[in-house]
Length: 373
Ligand SMILES: Nc1ncnc2c1ncn2[C@@H]1O[C@H](COP(=O)(O)OP(=O)(O)OP(=O)(O)O)[C@@H](O)[C@H]1O
Ligand SMILES: [Mg+2]
Image (cartoon, rainbow, N blue to C red; front, side, top):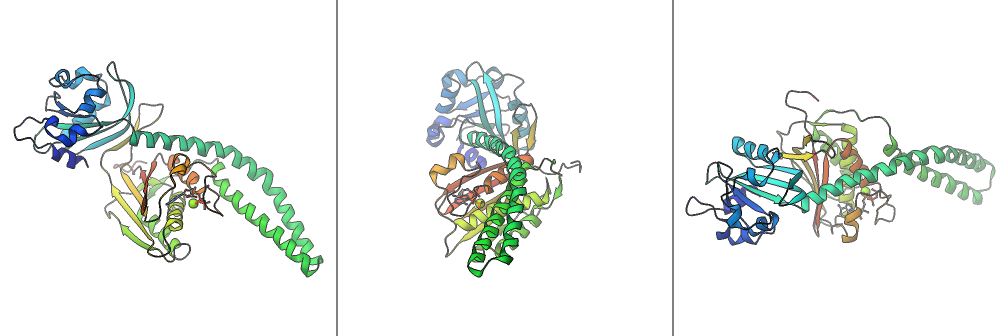
């Protein structure tokens, strides 16, 4: 997308003027063009609004006059110049007298036609909001943790007593009543299975992480799915074979993608259901760690796309909360668990849903290049 946008700025002379490109002028996202000396060369109306100043004031100013010199934006701009590749950073806090404090997503890309020039996109909502939601999912998962621990402890023991008693009764009652003792056993089994599922939330052990081949994880998930709940679904795999290993926990990652693929399989039409699994290396995705100055790199992107009807509008806001379900036999714990596990990996999950195309994107950290975990 960034290359496309940069490509749109194709001035006849060597001066990039966004005003001359109606598409960029119309975009509600603030866009700035910097030259090799970080002087603003062009801004769109959204940027004027964002910085509360007209283009006559902004153009010609050095970026350092607009933004505090310790802002990570300068580092990003330098890195775009030195690598000649675009960079995105989520959750960047911008605090200037003109803008006040705002959390933005910054995308910066080199302009091929103008060496040293960089286009900056500052988006205040969309992705940043998604991430914010994602971070609140972690709280949701945490609040369910204590309850899960309590339930598992208080309910499971008496349940096994009830089941044992029903089994003993089974031998002494007549055939008509045996149906009732079976019912007791089946229902207690069902509750036990539910509690087992919730147990994962209360697991107090820190997750162990090691290099994981995500393709092996996805292969396993696909096999389980195709031999079980997704027999009639067509799978499309678009993998980047050069993807480095994920820094993660294999079993937990299997759980994550099994849940996502199961949801996808339950959403696709009976005829012509299709699930696409993709992996990709995305350069330059960084996420601010809440409450600290540090940033994590999340370059590995795994997505699960289905051609189902889409996620109902009224569900989206709370999709990752526990017990949110539209399914008759659903627990609504699948995505809560997914959010918890991804959170423990320091990763991010986001979704995008339209009829016939629902995508869940998981961004994960990789094993450091020097092999350190
Ligand atoms: N790919 C998808 N397409 C459409 N809706 C989805 C998709 N994934 C999730 N949903 C919606 O989100 C809800 C919550 O999903 P979640 O996995 O948390 O629970 P569930 O699937 O209902 O129950 P369980 O996972 O216990 O079987 C689902 O009931 C469904 O309405
Ligand atoms: Mg589910």
